[in-house]
Amino acid sequence: MKDINLDTTVDQVLRKYPFARRFFESKGMYCNICACKPYEKLQIAAINYGHDPNKFVEELTEFIKGYGKSQQD
Image 1 (tube, rainbow, N blue to C red):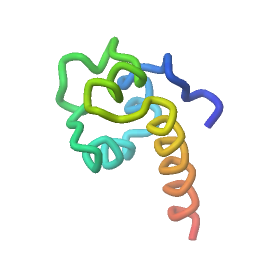
Image 2 (image 1 turned 180 degrees about the vertical axis):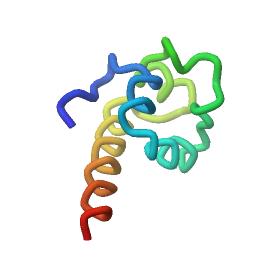
Image 3 (image 1 turned 90 degrees about the vertical axis):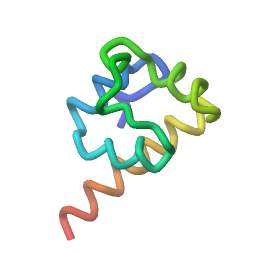
Image 4 (image 1 turned 90 degrees about the horizontal axis):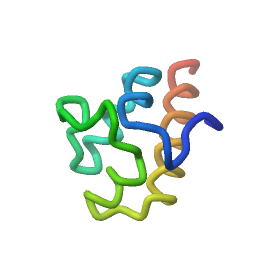
């Protein structure tokens, strides 16, 4: 997922990968209903919820990759 980085907004992720809502919720983040999602970058969202931004983006990317694989099986 080269298109996801610290500057990607939450909304961009959720529009392209709607199932990623599950990842955010697993981190205690209910981004799908938050008014900040259109402009809040992943880096800021991660920091606001006490997550390391780089690790957060890495885990999100792996979640998305894994979800795609599980849908093909």
